Structure formats: structure tokens, C-alpha cells
Image 1 (spheres, helix red, strand yellow):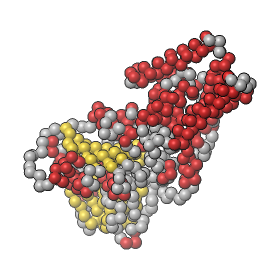
Image 2 (cartoon, rainbow, N blue to C red; image 1 turned 90 degrees about the horizontal axis):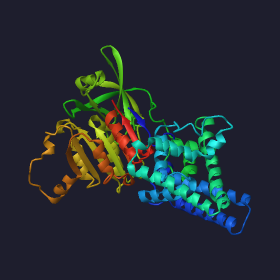
Image 3 (tube, rainbow, N blue to C red; image 1 turned 120 degrees about the vertical axis):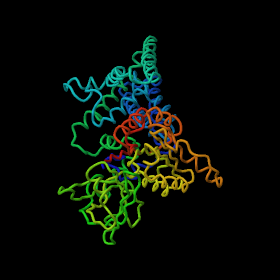
Image 4 (cartoon, rainbow, N blue to C red; image 1 turned 135 degrees about the vertical axis):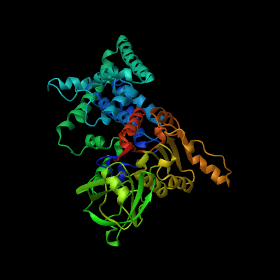
Length: 511
């Protein structure tokens, strides 16, 4: 099992992952300050007739401030409210670009983040040295061209807004020139904007690509943790100095011989294998939800190793893993292991860690993918009384559903804070047509609402519908995908369409 961390280099930094406020006051303050500075510089230039060399610098600083606000809104970091990010982003965009539109800029920038260090164009990072400054000055124009080339695959309303801004802002500038104020327009708007774009392109795009990997700075920190607000970076770097323990995916220790205490069937193809942890090894085998252990055994004369997610609750004296029969090792484990047998187990490692203050976590699981997800959701709900969780759980039929009884019990225990949406690909499944039976009390009647059953595999259309209502990105702090690559890929694409940042998505890849 491997894991895509919430924030690759800062995964264990709580300061880097605290829940956003409804409205980020520092971002509002920066927007207000930049607007005030730009207005003051304009007043100096037009009313007081202050020389251009004295005001262009002030205007340039104001544009840089507006760029930071725009960048925060692109990553939905100006607050939890979607409309706040949308409005502030649209207000800031004309200050930063004479050609761009906020939704188009958001799409291009998030596309770049989803593809790592890949740049959308080579316009401002490669080329003859003498030509680069000119390219930096016109960076926004080239990005508009890049967006228009992709417009066939973009939503119609987004493209319409991009075209409208491409006509409206330049048209307004032409009208101002027609009134005889071309010089004032150049000094107050165009020149500072171009200088700011050139400085940002040099500092944020060109310069970081010529630094050593991991060099500390705003560009590197943002690349690692895109949704972290700009005003939290000093705290993040300070917290990174703290001891964090083994990195995700690294072995935490050597193998130890553990005794199997129980082998319990979960389905016809899967079992729950539980190990007793000796007193002297309990500290080494202490785990957090979402971690895995590696098993080692000799099968038919060949040494085999396999990683399995831990599905026990933290603090238990025993360690349990779910194993589904899909290969040689799992065939050996499900068919041969019995209570009293011994097997080599490596201590827990890797895994995703949910932010302790996440208010709403959504998990997507299919089949054996429920193993790491179940303790993660249960622990999150138990640790935070106001937290909520939604589980989208895909199986063929009820007989293939692992931990079905445990899920029902958790839904009852957390009294409405855990909602489970079951998707059954076998439309003849009995859970899709529950028998009518009397309900002993009102509590049982209400508990039924916490688990719902839907026919068919979870589709991109159904996920889009959920994202448009109950699971709107503004209402969800973190997503955990623990499903086969095809289903996880569909989910990630839909989440990307709805501008969910990659940093808010955990991916559990399992065998």
C-alpha cells in the first residue's frame, strides 16, 4: 500500500492543515490594503501630478498584492465560502491581467498543480535569455491563448465569461485611450501591471526551476502544500523543524514474529486476521488509523511479502488486518493461517493522517478498500464531537460487503454524524429491496436514514450530483479515496472538475 499525502512535505504539520475560517481576514485585509494603495497612487498621479517614477512603484506593489489575493481565491483559501473566493477572485483579476478571467485562470493554475512541476507552456521558463523579459511582460496574454486552445473541453459558461472579459477589459482600455488619456492609462494601469507580472514570472516560475530541489521559500512551500494560506507559511516552516518520525511509506522497523489469535471470515473471499501484540512490542506496533503492516512468509519455497491496511482501532492490544483472496500470498493467508500460527510482521508504517479539526470528511471505498478507511473515519468522529463523515461504499452485493455490521453500529453510535451511501452493482441485491418490518422505536426509524442503498456502480454523473448538493466542495474538508485505480481515477477527475485541490485528497492504493 502506498499513500499520496495531504501535503507531501508538511504532512505532519498541524499548522499547515488547520481548517480555514469562514472568511480569511488576512486575505480580506490584503485585498483592502492593495486597493487602498493603488487608489492612493492613482490620486497622486492624476490629482497631485506626482511624477510617474514616484507612483509606478506603488502601483506595482498594489498589483502584486492583488495577485496574491487572486492566487488565494484560485485555491479556495480566502475562506470556506465558495462565493467569497469567487467574488474576490473576480474583483482581483482585472488588476492583475487586462485579458484574463478568474474561472479560466483557476482552471489553468490548478491543472498545473495536478501535473506536478509540468508547466502549461514553455513561454516564461525557457527560451533565449534576451527574450524572456518580454515573455514575462506578456505572460497573461499567452495563458489566455493556452486556455482558448483548450476551450472545447471546458464548460460553456466558463468559456463565455473568459470571452466576455477578453472583450470587456481591452474594450474599456481602448475607450479610455480614445478620450485622450493614453499616458495616464499607461502610467496608472498598464505599466505597473506589466512590471508586476514580469517580477512574478521571474520569482515564481523562472527562478525556482534553477534552485536546488527542496530549497526553502514560498514557491517551494506552495508547490508542496497548495492550499495553505499565504499567511501560514512562516508557521509551517517553523513546525517542519520538529521531529516527525518515519516518512510515509518508509519501513518503521524490522520484522517480528507474531502469533495469530483469530481468523474470522468477513465474506466468502476475505478474512480478518488478528495478531496478539506482546507487551514488549506494543510501543513499536503502536499505530495511527490508515497505516499498514507488511507480512512475510515462505510459500512453496519462495519468500513472499505483502502489505495490508490495519483495520483495528488505535489503543487496542491486538492488531487486525483484512485479507482478500486475490493472489499467492493472500491465498496462503486466507486458506492456511489458523489461530496459533506465527508469521513475520513489520511494524506499522506509512498511511494518511486526517487533520484533527476536519469538520466533514468524505470517504470512497470499494471492497477491501474499506479496511484502512473504516478506522480513519471512526477515529475522526470519536476524536471530534462536531465532526461529520460521509462514506460512499461500492460492492457487488450484501454478501460481499465487508464490515457491514460494524458500519451499521458506527452509524447508530455517532447518531447522524456518519452517513453511509451503499452502491450495489448487482441490482438484484436484497438490500436494494428491504423487507417491510415493524420498527421497535423512533431511534431505529431515524437510524435508517444514516444508511442508504443505490443500485449500480458509483458513476461520474452521480458523484457530480453529490458534489453539487450535499457534498459540495465548500462543505468538505478532506477526501479519502480507497478504491481500485479506475474508480479512484473517475473520482479524482470529477473532484478536479469541481476545483477540489489535490492537497485535500488522500489516495490509498491497495492490492
